[in-house]
Image 1 (spheres, rainbow, N blue to C red):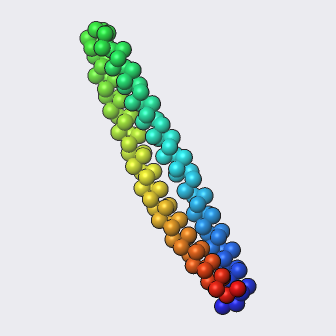
Image 2: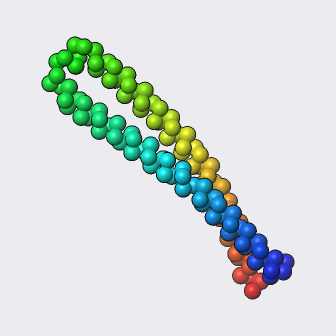
Image 3: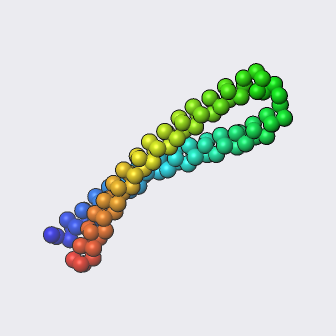
Length: 114
């Protein structure tokens, strides 16, 4: 293989690696956002439990049942979203590893033919 061909191949593999790397970033950001939403939900639950411990009307009116239903549905939705994002992230990481391996292989070939 000629040196110019290796240089061209190195550019292509670098571009491929950068593309895979850039496709991972939005997934990581979305995962962090969902984790923050889950943390806020946990904080709301703690605050509600503290506030409702002394509120009799909360249980009498059935508001506690409504709140628990909303919390459960919201948590389920966020956890499903998080699982979906993590599955996408694992696929993106696998693609990134393959792309990185190709980039390294071409780089090693290029260094040997210098």
